[in-house]
Length: 615
Ligand SMILES: [Zn+2]
Image (cartoon, rainbow, N blue to C red; front, top):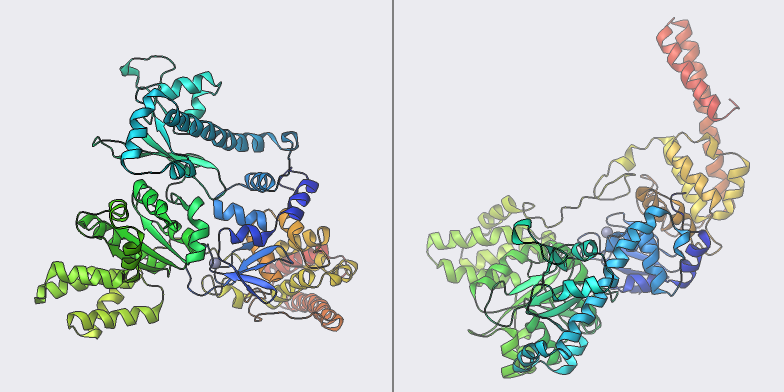
């Protein structure tokens, strides 16, 4: 066993935590039959192939083959180690795991993360306190008032103020008995250069004289901070650097507060600035998140897919906004996420617009916002003009965007639309798009088809399975789907005869940790160390297509006593045939005096005897 968090603790977490509840915080799930389904958070798709079973307490994606239990889901979706995922769920469900029950390295790995999160929370309070109480905070209080930010919004977003000066926070940290190295790895303080004179503890504050926006994840943890200046000094925005708890390419500001409203509205507004976000929330447009001064990533879009079907990008009417739309278009299209672009009138940003006009005109504009491709075509036509060169320029701009679409029907529809708009030959346009397709694919993750489980990639492996492998696989699936068969398999020592030693190991784990009466396999999942093994078991538990190695989907196949017996008989017959074959081949080799072949075959025979002392 790879981990030392005791089984009873894991069992306690499993009993209290519900996989459907936890996953539905990150993925929009719909009940379908006994199970739930939704868009897979691990690969780009348009039609749901991600399935969650409450009975079995597991998930499986028929598209990319990702699968596992509640722990592996958290690990994969939040980038945690096993022990961190256990602790995360334990805390979430109020289960205490005494640290003495963990190994030293687990304790260390967890404790750094935990310590940073705890420190961040204290620092958030420190900044909030400076905003509310300190005399130095008056300037920030006035600033927020001038910008019209209400007290309710300040409280909800836990805004703060980093006082001017180089060591306000450093001193607070020194007083609170926290090692400066920890605060440094949390990105809160920065070591002074040796040349700059070594005062105090040798660190200075990262955030100075800025309004502070704590960045909080959907689990309510303070993972980082953003700071904005109150005048024209640079940089306008400053964010925490990447830390063990903060990954900017996955994080969207305000999602912790916006997520329920995003689900209700089934759409989400994406803005660029902190104040844009606050202004929209204050005007009741609460399905709004902000990017944190970084370009939108595929991870952002996938995260949003868990809360909304549509996005609306809101930009100022400047060229930077158009550039940003151009950059993010392939990402939305690659992820099959519907996106529209809303440009505000000259001189406005979302903040100034809602304060001046109120929320209704904003929402009205959103209603008529153009889809991102149409928007880009309109813009490209305006900038290139209608000359021949201009039209060539438009196609050059737009072909990569349409080429990024994963849906081939949509791709040809948009190619036709583009050709129509500029009056070009649709075939020539499509040709140009083909040249560009795939080049800007937003999804670099390729599925590791360890078992040929993925129907799309790594295929072939399923078909290539030899007869004995296929039947060994069926036996493993039978053990998972029909645990009543396990006793017979053990009694007949079937696993001992497996030629695929990996499947044999998995089979042995199933014997040790069999599925429960209603099919819960999470105990087994906990004991599989390898991600590929978890995937294989998950796919078999779900009766996944391909899982049977080219035998086709088992679906909700009902195992009957008779079919179980038939499979076992078939397997045993195969074993003795193989043994007989070998005997025949040895005889033939002896007749031909092929000593080298005889030697080889005898070695094989010996291995067979070793595996199973009967032939
Ligand atoms: Zn998937």
